[in-house]
Amino acid sequence: MLSFIGRSIIQKIITLFFVSVISFFIIHLAPGKPSQVDPMNPKITPEVVERYRKAFHLDKPLHTQYLYFYRDLFSGRLVSMKDNQAVLGKVWERFMNSLLLFFVGTIITWTLSFPIGIHSAIKRGGFYDRTTTFLSYLLISIPGFFFAYILIILVVTRFHVPVIGMQTFGLGDASGLEVAMDRIWHLLIPSILGATGGIAILSRYVRGQMLEVEGHDYVRTAKAKGLPPEQVHYKHALRNALLPFVTMFGLILPGLIGGSVIIESIFSWPGMGRMGYEAILARDYPIILTINFISAVLVLAGTFISDILYLVVDPRIRL
Image (cartoon, rainbow, N blue to C red; front, top):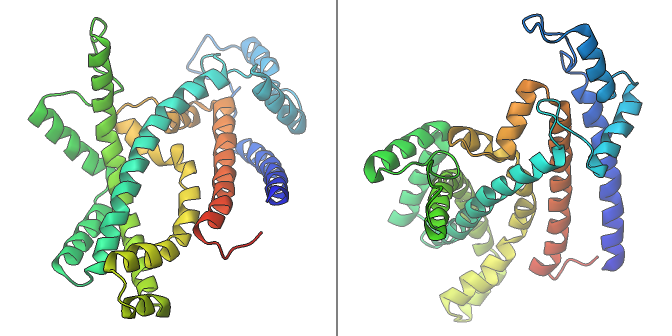
């Protein structure tokens, strides 16, 4: 077990190194330069641009820029090109904001998807199965931004509460309980929106996987032995149907960044996805490369967690 973990960590560190090198050079192949002179801004003179290039090591060769970038990143000295603030501080603040949104949305998705999918498989062809199938395809077909605006209109007009941002403006004198409840309310609406598509897709996967496992010989044998239906479905069938979802669970971690761009933009939620989008528009290379590096770390961490969870779900797997 320990040798497997050690080998896996070494392999993922090597992979992370190659990802960081490739992404660094690809970013610099994009059109335009962060140090180019803006003819519409008289304050940016060639002398200012030259100082700018030296401050961010843009006058060095690419391989030297790579070394300087990750040295400054890991030492905490890397700053944003846009506002000259520390990159790690900005990323950490936005990361915690996105983590709240991601955590609540993931709990809602996985908590509801499995009961819906399992019950649909058990009641295959019935009214419940047909209804959930129709609703799932309806939610998959509706664009996220359209559903978000409909949800905002309904909530604001029905309950007369604000849903934009992380908190209501003007709560400076409110009590701690009021501030906490206001934060939960602002968090709940975008989390539900982010979970709707996930519930629709994941419940279909659960249903399909359960139907496949329910047709195996050992499940039919368990039914023939007279075991209770709950034990057949949830102990014998469900456990063997979970294996594909272990991989899916490990790959949801990158959604902490990329999967929340639209939601964070619509609800003005200051998270990682929105910061990455703004950094791309501003050509803020330190922010873009840092977010890309964190995304690679999350992908590799997710695959590592999946490898470990395989042992828990399927005892037939040996290292």
